Length: 257
Length: 258
Image 1 (cartoon, each protein chain N blue to C red):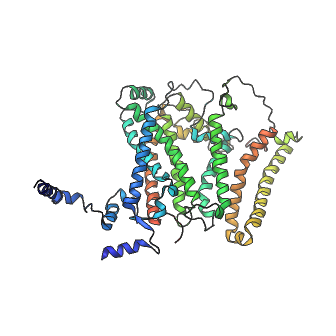
Image 2: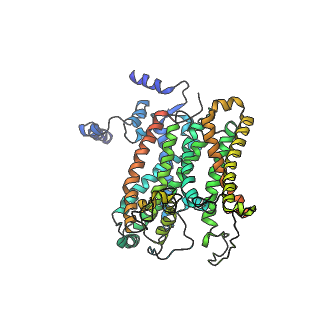
Image 3: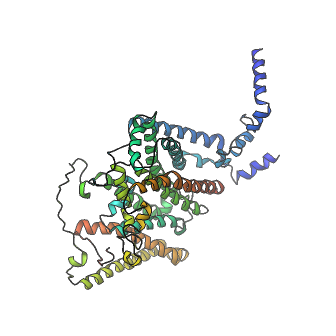
């Protein structure tokens, strides 16, 4: 009798539940077995690398971080270490953590749907696949000595000469005075965020409507807009670098962006 | 006759105090036993007794969360084996790696499994995050579990990164040097970072020196990373994993509303 009540409580409105044993445990066991066999075979066939003993006086060229950090190392091409190595990774972690709180769409909870959460999925796709994963692929397979770009079939020539033609954006636009350049650079950075967040605001209003914006609230909007515009700053800087050889936008004795 | 004898032996084995002290229920396929199988077993009771049908399907879960945990277990088992033969001392570490590879029974295999499982764990945890995002499983009431998951993802990377140094070969010290150079540039706290002068950070007293246990990568770093890798991070990760699994068990697997 007690058993029957117990069962009833677990069932819920519609009984689409199955017993964990055997239905889930069986699947877990089989998948674990399969993966362990694959891992064993892989480990029997491919040895973990072991190079010559550590030698702090001999720096290999290129020196690469572990592959999962190569996205960050690749970002160092476009931003200074304090930004690419500390600020942006911290923002990635914080940005991931706030996802459940800025996403107020009640739909798409527990099933696959693209139509009901198009923009959420596209944003994640941009951040994870386009930026994070592709930067790792570039850093792993396309970077050689001097962190220069090489095709996988090209010889890694340590003496490859790459002209250092990058200049700062204010210089490119004709600014020669130090303070004017710094002021212009600061203006550009601030304008980028103001314009970016403004465009984001208008865009959300147009796509989602005023009701949504009210439900979303200013805090959620501000956090989302800031993180989104910051995320876009990476491709923006990449385009500026690759197309216009722009080194920095803002140059000061303390920070360069 | 023989069959009867067999039944008697079976009865003797199953119906005595020792057996009953260990096994609390029978194995007949009854709904009661199916539930007890899970609830009366400390390991299996990470699961709820019943799960919604769609939440079991592989094309929903991709099995990635469980496989990440499996990879963690593989690295724990193989890692303990490696710890028997490895000394985190600059003079011995590399020699121990060679010893492990060439002289220890299954040493090379254990090392390979440890390394590839660690790499697989990183990939699986990313795919797990991707799946959880796609199914919107972080939505209420599971927001906090997503945060715990992000922390576990970071810890997975740190586990892998601290382990990278231990072979003490060229690959490891330079990868770790490059990977931790950014700590030098931490604003305020790194000696090459913005505004470091105001704080007084210098090469032997800044964020990276704290991580390394000294201004440059060296024997002190090896010991530090060894302890982080073998004790500290696994311990923190285990606690967070317990929270992660407990939460999903309480909140239930996500699914379309009924």
